[in-house]
Image (cartoon, rainbow, N blue to C red; front, side, top):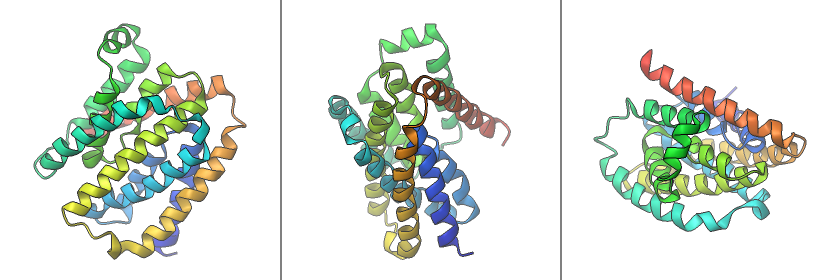
Length: 239
């Protein structure tokens, strides 16, 4: 089976996961890409595919998007794109996953830390970190999702709003990598398969989401976020 078919199917299934749970699909996909792609192509290819996944998921749930959160996140994203874009070539990302994973775990499960950090939590900062770090580590959706999970009570609102945030982050990623010379047109065939798989997966995941129990699903989101955070930390420590 060709790489196009394999990664097209992978994009479909990971997009279904993200459509149901609101996150995790991007991390699953970026974990698979090193098996098939050259390291220099992983993040930009992932960016195009995840833009298709997140933007389609947002459109399929457009009525649930919390647009009031957009301005702050957008401003933070612009600043993060500039800062991390300038430092992209020179920054060492070795210990960044540990910082992200620790933040997520404390934010979700430590009431004392959550109460402390809430005083300083801002969608300006979330936009800066999620979009900026996305240029380096690829999948950063849990940064915003961990906060949205605390502030919103409806799973559809969490997923739709997170999709909006991630769409912005992936647009920034595509612009930056295009600016520094990555040729997306050289990978047109692969991208067509992956984009189509992502959009169809988003539609299927959105339909399947309505079958899930809201209370149970929110707990699953927190649990899987925690597992992903632990995996991020462990990958650095055991490397």
